[in-house]
Length: 202
Image (cartoon, rainbow, N blue to C red; front, side, top):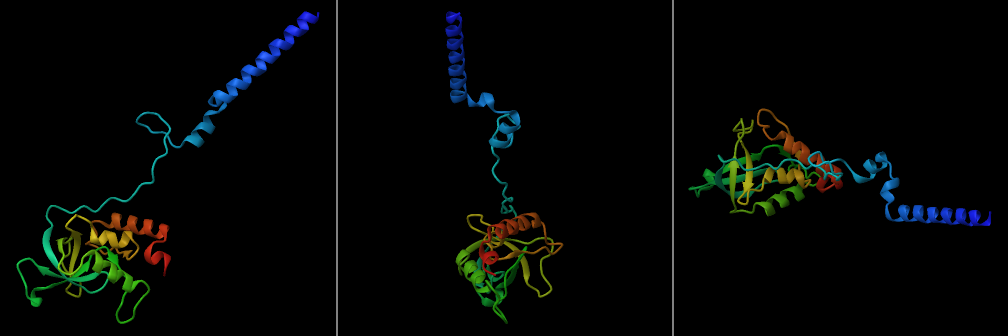
C-alpha cells in the first residue's frame, strides 16, 4: 500500500515538472490562434508569416521625361516665383510662375500665419540662380497670366510636393491642372496628422 502511494506521488511530481518545463520553454504551445494573430501583426500573404506592415506613404511625384530646364530668378512668396528661361538674360524675359497643386499663406497685403516661413523655406530650397526642371499640366496659365508649373530640383525633388509635405502649404485642387492631386492630398494629410509646419503653428 505504501509502495503504491509513493509511486503515485513520484508520478505526480514528474508530471508537474514536465508541465512546468513545457510552459517555461514552449509557451507558444499554450497560445490560442486568435491571440497569436493579435500580437504578431498582419499576415504577409506572400509567405504566410505574421509580420507587421509599415504605414503606407504617398507616392513620390517623379519628374516627367518631358520636363525642361530653367533658372530661378526670384522667389516672391511660398507659391509664386520668377524663372529666367535658358538662353535669356533680360528681366523682361522672366516668367512669373504659380506653383500647381498648393496654396501657401499670404504675405501681402497682410502677413498670414506661416506666410514668411513658407517664402523663406522656398528661397532656401531653390535659391536665386538655381537650375530647376519645370513642367506644365493641362492648363498653361491662370487668370492672372501666371504660368502654372510643377518644379523639380536638379536631384529630382518635387518642389511643389515638398512644400505640402513639410507643412508650408495646403493642397489645392483646381481642374484641369490636377494630374497629381492624389499625391498632394496624401501629403497634406500626412503633414496635418504629424502637426508639422503650419499645422502645428497656425
